[in-house]
Image (cartoon, rainbow, N blue to C red):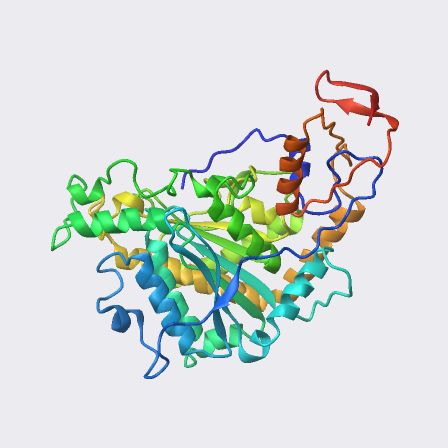
Length: 460
C-alpha cells in the first residue's frame, strides 16, 4: 500500500477530531453532543452446525492455507464455523453490504466474562471519549480492532485471518485465552470483498496447476482494473475520513459504537519487499500525541520479538507516515487509538509463489505466517498494556475537550442560502461524531476569514 503524505491543512484537520470542536453556523461554544449512533449492525446467527469438533482452516476448506486464495464466501463460512464452536465467547455482527451485495461483517471475541458485558464495554469506551454521560471505568478490557484486506488484491490478509480466528476460538490455545482476559478483539475479515473476489477469482482461474514462480508468468500480472479497489474502483483506504463509499459509511457506524484503543490495518506491498510494522515514518501529524508516537514503538517491539525469534526480515520507519487522515492508521489515531499499518511483501503480483531477484522464493504460506504472527503480537500488546491504553485513551479526549490545540477553537460557516449543502455538511459531521450547533440569533463577532486571509467583522 503506497503511502502518500498530504498537504491537508492543520485547521481543516480540526474538523476531524470527534471531540469538543464546534462547526456549522455557531453563536457560542454550546454544541450538541451526538447520541449513540443508530447502527444497521445486528448480531447474525452462525449458520454452521456446532456438532463435531472445531476444525482448522485446512480441515474445513479441504486445502492447506497457502495453496490457493479463498473466496470471501468461504472466509465467512469458516467464520460462522468457529463462532458456532465458541458460544458465549464469539459472535458475528453484520454491519452492511457492498455495492455487489457481498456481506460486510465483523467477528467480536472475548472470554466468557467479557463477552457477557460487550454492551457495557462499548458504553464505557464512549464514556472514556466523552461521548456519553456517566462515569467511565478504566477497569474494563481494552479493545483491539483488526482490519484485513481493504485492498482486495492484497489478499494474504483474508488467508491469515482464518488462522487468527481459529486461534481466538481454540480453547486449547492457553496463551490466546489468557490475553482475552484483558482485551476484546474485533476482526473484520475482509473490508473490501468486491475487490478481494475480483482478484482471487482471477488468480484461481489463470494460475498453473503447479504455480509458476517466474515473475513474467501470467499469474503475476493482474489485468486492469485489478482487485485493489471496490466496485466503483475507489480506494477504500483513502476513504476513512471522507466516507464517500457505502462500505466506509456502514463500517464507521459500528466502529464508533466500539471506539477501539488499537486499530491494525493489514496490507501488502511489492513482492520484493520484506515486512513493515510500526513505528511509522515521518511526518507525523502534529496532533498525533507523544503517547501515540511512543506506543507505536511499544507494539513494534512486540512484533520485533516474534520476527526476530523466527529470523524473519522486516523494517520500520522508512515509509508509511502518519499524516493525512484518510488512512486506516491515521483516522483511528485522530480518534484516540493507536493506529498502525502492517505491510507484507507480495500483493497482487505475489501469487502463490514468487521468484525474487535475490534467488529466494516468496510463498503465500510465508506471507500468511507473517500476518498471523503480527496479529497475535498486536493482541498480546493490547492485553498486556491495557491499563495504559485505557488511561491514555481517556486522556486524549479529555485534553481535546479542555485544552484543544491549534489557533482556532471554533469554525463559523455561513449557509449562503443553500440549506441542502448545509445539511450535507451536518450529516458528515454527525457520521464523524463532531459537535456542531446553530446560531439562535444574528450576532456580530470577529474572526479570521480564509477568503482574504484577514481578521474581519463577521455577522452570523
